[in-house]
Image: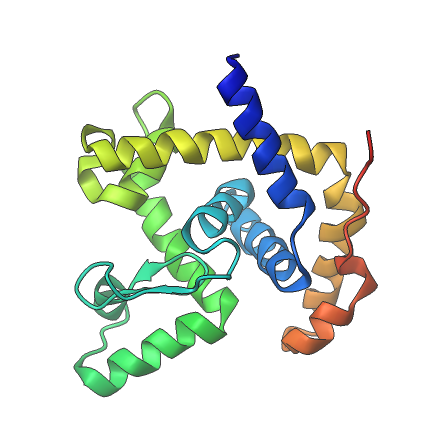
Length: 204
């Protein structure tokens, strides 16, 4: 591995180590909702890349109507999936993506799974799907899509290592999963105050 790659990996790990409570909430929910479909790590990476775990939850320049939520779901396509039309519904759906992580996660997973199935007979299936999540069906044939996939794949490896090293599943994910299961409508304020959302980072 090159020095540049190692340096970038260190920078990515530092990003994960320094997440605030709101970002951590998005990471946890992304993993839990994604894991239900077998894509826990991948959905976390999408939230990381697209919005820095909810720090930048919209891009008005993306697509025809912009993209919204932790996963920057394209509003135009989301409206079609939910059979919604008109300005009022457009605003309502954008707000739903901004305020309801579970709803936005499931919509993003619908997009991911469609592209994942499309790549089922290819090598590097997740890598190609990351490219399509960014660039549509052009995928890695598109320069921006390939660049997106390269970065997403690197983040995926760093994320998996970070989760194992810090025992995130047992120390953070599972306690949070129990809270979600027992109180699906837990408020964001209550979530941020939960001790289970504090990551005890291993110091080298």
